[in-house]
Length: 435
Image (cartoon, rainbow, N blue to C red; front, top):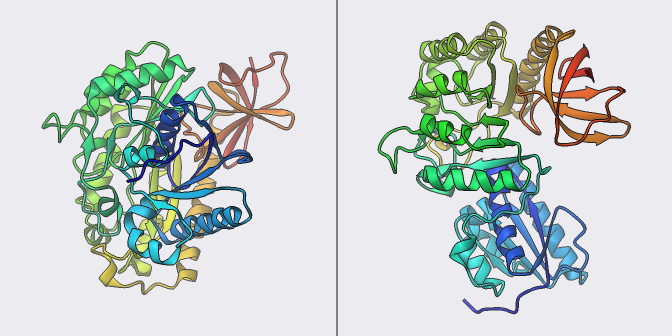
């Protein structure tokens, strides 16, 4: 690959999940360490290069990625950029097609080609920059990607095709990165991977998430550690003991269940049945009293008739999840489920999604009402207009509930923790005053 003159300024935009965001942050850190000005989702004025970190997971995400590329190409045509580079999941999955359809793009790179991107930008790779990151989130919280890829075989998911097999990062490397993030002001660490419960099987020959959590909880300055994307099949019970016993690990668990009907779960290749899923949820709640569970569900998977959907509805009503999200099924070429077709009309999928969320809205409102008149530890995230906005340990950034801080004698500082008296609530937010 031809080495180019190093640009003075680079603009990066990130689409998709927090795992993509971490990839962008690592690329930004390496570029900044070589004296390149890098802006992320900010004014691109003066940037010679635009980089789009794309998502290729489901149809909506792919469309957003293509639309963003077209916008950047139009900006290039207008003279705003000299070059447009595409990286990430869409580029990994559809590179040959994109080369034909988007000839204006100057280079395409896959999900594991940051070294090639650096070389393309005229930057020499330096091993000592391995853990370097530029944090794009508010400086008090960040994401820690503990593994790449996935060894699961869910029939609806294209991620293993895009990201490859699971590759866990060593505990020592993750602890070092956590310490670096704390030195930059991070107080809350959100652990992510395609499947966090698989962590360690490849390098330690056993599930080692509990060991990692123990080590991270000892990092001085980390006040909240939060666990995401826990797979239900083969869930390591020792993780529950660590969450229960460590005061700086949030009593929160993100465990995507996807469905509850055993036939649908079998079609999804999830490796668990209805009874096993319910037993696991019972175990989690028994071992960790007061834990808040977040789950995600898929509606409209092939074979989901009225009977299967009603079973899912009853499951949601009975489980009273504290946090819940719903996706409509998106058929992805190359996945085992793709030949099953997409027989349920999109309108029906949307109606099912809305019905579940209507029920969940009432459940969430009920949970929130129980918090009124209690005092809760809150992390202040931002100021919006004339109010401050924060979160409890039961709420992950971007996807969960917020706490609206009304007027009080104490002027909150963004990134600090406060005790807040909850005075009111609605379906998805709490209202309170600092005490």
